[in-house]
Length: 345
Image (cartoon, rainbow, N blue to C red):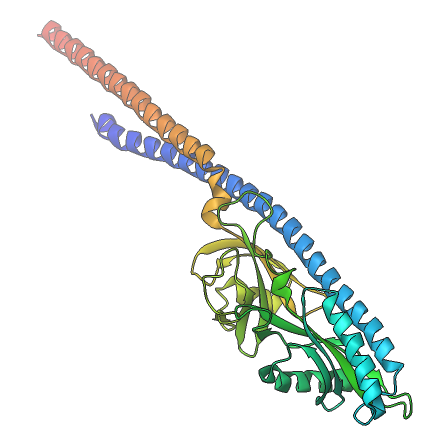
């Protein structure tokens, strides 16, 4: 009977070991499927972000190149005497107007002194942008090279953006810095107008464009939906390493499982532009990234639990047979013992 008393405990341990083995094997299988799903989604994101990044780099290079040509033309005039010679101002004003009209992204163009004060402006050059422009122009002369200036809100429309491209001009007389040609571009008119939209069918996949401003991350493009907020008004704390924007800004190129600025868990890839201090973020909600494999995962769990139940039934049946066999053996042994006792008597 002592042997039989340990039988239920052994059955419980046997079934627990079997169920645990099935659950662990299923969990490992699902983990492998999850990694496969994440890898496939990241491959798509990397391809999309590289495509968008390359387009932005080419866009910036083309605008700087065209402004260099315009600056070379302006530099052929005696711009040192621009304020005193009206005929030169008139000719250059016409030239700048023609330059402005050849690209719908151009909001305004101008010739500025090396200290940032304007000599000629054509188009829209708001007073609010002049102070920022002065600092950018001074930086261009300090670096002795063309630069892309500070992104500012406003432009062709109230909800637009303005980006300054600046090429310094040297004085023909003195060989020193004489001024700069500035082109104010509205990137939302063209390159950024549909930037946040995913090129493939997807419910949550989108692209963001970020830049750093001190201890904050500024969202230049917030995704496929701009949330109806003013431009450059969406910001995130740089110190929060749980956000994909913070990870992207601090580390540049990478692949992340993190939160977006809405607090959703996302799978994302990030890339830093070569031409500008901007970061491209390609991201997809984790739920969507794993959704295509959800039926497979459910099937694995159904099979696992089905096998566990079936195994439990088989073990229970075998246990019942074992108990019945042991009980029958005990009865036979008792009967044999009784018969021997009777013969002795």
